[in-house]
Image (cartoon, rainbow, N blue to C red; front, side, top):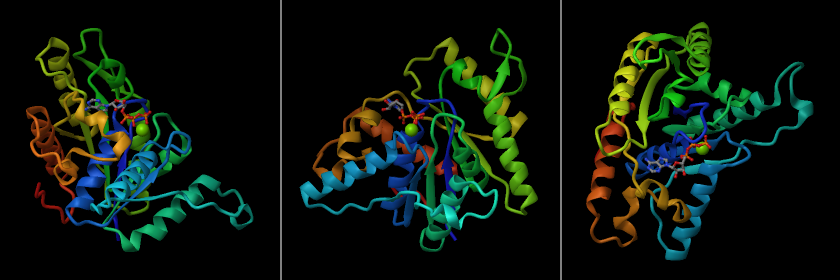
Length: 269
Ligand SMILES: Nc1ncnc2c1ncn2[C@@H]1O[C@H](COP(=O)(O)OP(=O)(O)OP(=O)(O)O)[C@@H](O)[C@H]1O
Ligand SMILES: [Mg+2]
């Protein structure tokens, strides 16, 4: 049975699709059969990313290990049970089809609260939450005082994860391993950065997540989308020498992947 990784944060633009693409491609490149579902049915960022990959590799005549993108199946409304939600049904049908033949199913969630995203969270064996290094983004996890020091309580997104955890416990499923990673970190040490680091690690203990090393703000994380590549693919498409920033980005990806601690995965890049 596949291990389900959900990448979620109801804050838009936190880096979910970028992180999803890198995790899924890293897994595929390490030989793990990986399926990808995109729950942003409108923007379909990771779907588009993987379509770009297929098209670009086809023009080069290359075949690089890649995750497989799957659309949610269309469901005949008449097949729904009374009161059953069509989106729940589409998601569970997709997962049921993919589970037997994949090592991992990665689900990229939209940057808003949707029913589909909520259901996906309750399916997560591993939940990865990228977080921009800003207290506006932090506010969806927890409320904090004016100094950015004292946490007064959980916020909407953490409460949603808590509800997903409850659901899993009731169903006798293993608990969600929740990992928060800061994304688009600035290179310099700054007061805000230190404050965020402290606030995130304090919150980790309080609401039960692990903190993974994050990604810095780097051009390489956003320029490869049109070709559908990740920084792990550069050498294979003929980039002879990685620049320092790309080498550092690769190290960030390696450290993040290690800290996810996924079953059966030993990081070899
Ligand atoms: N580490 C990074 N360095 C530089 N740019 C980044 C980084 N991570 C993400 N970005 C850029 O930030 C923007 C948001 O990233 P992305 O689309 O992955 O976020 P998202 O959480 O999936 O957004 P949405 O909520 O809309 O689905 C994009 O323009 C992306 O290229
Ligand atoms: Mg996205």
